[in-house]
Length: 275
Image (cartoon, rainbow, N blue to C red; front, top):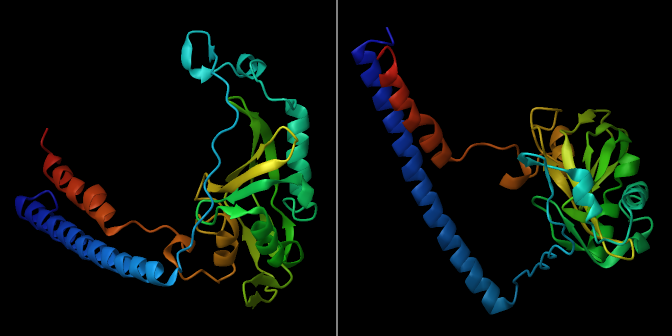
């Protein structure tokens, strides 16, 4: 019986053993990581091979929150939006965001993107305007993937009135060549269903997008991309999972296994039938 004292002792020993193995392994992994980064830093300084990324934009527009009556947790969106000092009305801003989407995220009409435009996804970026257009256009997504990103629910952020948020639930069929760097993935006929993802566009007073964010998965249980967003999810679904950790489905770290699973289980074992 699992409720017997000997069984509890064996289970406790098992969880302690697994937890300690995970912690010790994590310690050595961190040491190796620090040593590797030290040698990389030396190499970068000696050869000038350091990659310097653009700095993130600071928030350019903000509104003080106005709360619903007797409820500080829920905004009065109408009242908050009325305090906006941004020059472009809400309906026009949403129309501009949709126009950029229809122009291949501005790649087909670059003047829709500001000169200081930045592409910022969870892993990739920031990319400047020219680099983003070159990379994004090179994939050939529109020809390779039949279907739609199914973008919907465009709305202006009441606290940041120059920013439009929207969602995507992509459904595609791989019917053409998909290019990823030097690699060409031939049409496979596979269906790709991406998880719901949150995206946003921030605009300047001229109505140009200066920041595009996206690929932020809000429900990893949906679709056949194993919770990966953006192009990483599409690649994985097609059977071309990328070789680095950030481009692969999430797996818990060893320290998470120890502190969130094994060690808490010990207390649960001895609480059984204690009442």
